[in-house]
Image (cartoon, rainbow, N blue to C red):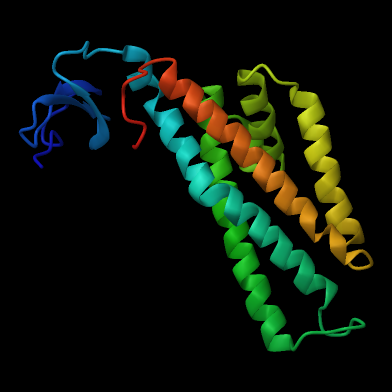
Amino acid sequence: MSSLASSPVPPGWYPDPGGDRQWRVWTGAQWSSVTRPYGELATPRSLVADLPLIQALRRLLRFGIAGTYAGLGVLVSVLAHWPGTANPVPEWFGVAASSVAVALLLLGAVSFAFAGRELEGRWEPWAFVPGINVLMVNALVSKRLNGQPLRRVWADGLLIVFFVVWFRTEPWLCVAPMIVAVGQSRWITALLDHLVNSTSPSTSTAL
């Protein structure tokens, strides 16, 4: 497939460079998988404008949520059984597992930071603060779907606090991060569907 990278072509709908009789979205840097037959209008500008947000939310679904809550779960579990505690794990395992957890948390923090930037339309200081950016993205997604942002932030925040503080004595609280992750995934998926379907009902959503 040919590329428009050699010329400063703005994002928009263009004839498919693969030769198919359809339009394809050029994001400004690469060809998207979003297409539309020639017989339909080729300029739903709101979808093109929302492409960065759609892509950021899809990255959040693929990497950010899993990285954040898997990393948190592993880190809290390892610390609860760190060498020197009642039921310790081997030191080498504790060091290796905590390193993996930190890497996962970093991946999640970066994903949430970029999602927050696209939701707000600009960089905000909270986007660079791990944990806070998770709560803010959660609130912004809820707000866009006409939900109740404060209620969702408080509910998710309390579940995570309970997990971190009492997991050592209440192992069943391991379900808390999973509940929060599933809830956030459902809301983000709903927002993605809304963004795509409200602008281009017949357009493929695979980016």
